[in-house]
Amino acid sequence: MISHSWCYINHRVFLQSHGRCKAPSDERRIWTDIRSIVYLDKSRFTLDSSGVADFFGGAEAASAMATVHVCRNRKQWGWYNSPGSYEIAKRYGLLTKFGFFFGGGHADPAELLTLFELDGRKGPQFLRVHSGNIIPETDHLAAVFMTECSSPACPITPPKGRQPVGVTITELRNCPEDHMVLKPIPTSWDSPILAAVPILASAGTCAMCAVIADWYSFSLILLGIIANGISCLVIGSVKLEFMRPRLAGEESDQEKRSSSHTESHRVSGILITPTNIVLLKGREDAAMAVARGKFVLPPAPRSRSFYKYIGWCSILLLVQFIAQLLLIPQGFLFGQIMFVTSLGASWCYNLWLCSLDKAGVQQKILLENILQLKEDDVKRYRLNNWPAMVVFVLLTVVLEDEDYKCVLNTVLDALVEDTSVVWGIWKSVILKQLLELGDKPRVSEEDLDTMIKNLEVSGGEADGLSKGDCLKLDALLDEARSGIEIFKERSRSVP
Image (tube, rainbow, N blue to C red; front, side, top):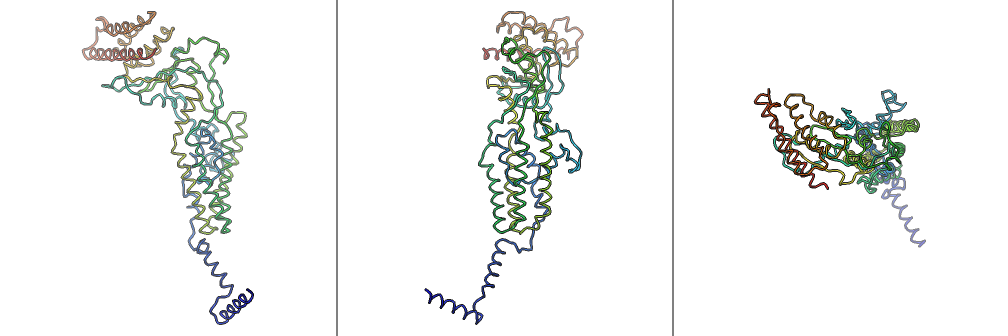
């Protein structure tokens, strides 16, 4: 072995002396050149720093951040280098005392719910049946609830002529507390496999930058991972809560459980839109939970410290953004490509989170966690026109409420705001028949058939009407008869 090694060394010395073999220093230069080609650290091409920092939009990142309270375990899966750090910092920083860093003042903290898409929608008109009060515009949760009730249902009769109107009867068997802590519900967003994709991409690209000793790109990717992870943990640290106004003279929870169930079968509130009517049957405080309930985040005692932490997270994200602008050009081209690759994987994940139905998740929280509705508690009907809907609703109120005489005019005036002579006669005829029907201890199909036959206008009531008004009145009465027919079909299907 020794003789072979000695011969090899002599052969190397002979070749080097004749210029036929490169010295060790030349070999090191060759390996350095190969390394430069592979890792692109001697390339004259460089990525534009502002283009790298803003290559992907921040709107998707901000929208993805809004899922931390409605998606289970979402706040623990934020450890990746997310794009749009400045957009997130600006949106949440304006709500804190650090708002001047982002070109604005201290915004209203209540806007945090709007940023999380937990508030901001305007709901329909609401009628408190027994008090007669009308709320012209309800809140966000009423709009969410109306979306569920507006889902298409199989019509009992095919719509014809005028625009059809949907009627939804909802049994509110559970009265939610005036303050509840909500738990996130399981959704398709909880997939740890999808959440691991940007995390592994960020960790992998960070490690590759460390291998080639590109400490600028390595530091920026690591800073992005830390900044986004901490922001998700801080913003998702408080739990989503539900609050509703407590009515004057409202019973305690124990009194509600021990009281009779007479209120659970009567209509307490009505949500009104031009195409859909929702009857809320149950206690009035349960109906008000739909009309005036709202999500709360965070509760008042902890809001000051919470907003302080959000402010510091905004500063950290701002530092990340500035570092990206200044230090990206200092890294190798390979490191810059790794940085953009981590942003691309994170952007795809954020885009997927944005595409999911956040309103549907809120709807599920409202129906299952707050109202605790079952599938049989919501029944949908479709009527051919508005007059048929009015009669259908009035029959529901009359036959299921002992105090119907006190609320009949209130409901009729809320549903029919037209004050013309023709509508006035139509309302008087309908009221007369409903009062006669309500005085009976039990209403049968024969009684409804009799009501259909009696929907006629007396000669005295028709005096003074033109021929066109008489034809219009006859058409309205015919439409009222169709509403009674649909109510008869409902009575057969409801025990």
